[in-house]
Image (cartoon, rainbow, N blue to C red; front, top):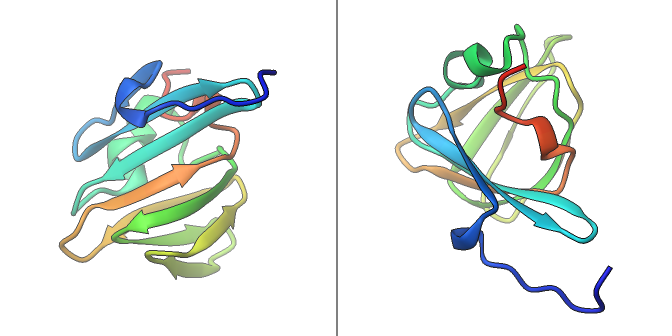
Length: 120
């Protein structure tokens, strides 16, 4: 791994569009992939990524930082939470999520995003 690595999300190695209402930009760094997600108002994982993933709920673990907007999450066990600008979150596999309000949620994901929003 290089001593210093600087990358721009605008120059992502891969852009994974959702069915509608957003995309995930994947930047491959020496320490692993980083995802930058833009989740437009009205986005919901079960409607806009679930058909791509082919699972009932998201099975990707996420560890990230919310830049803007708000996102709600419901775990398979019914636990719910909401995150907004400046929040750091860790979300285990087995959840649905959706944007809250009229602003896109922008999220930097340091989790295991190598297969997020990719067809199985």
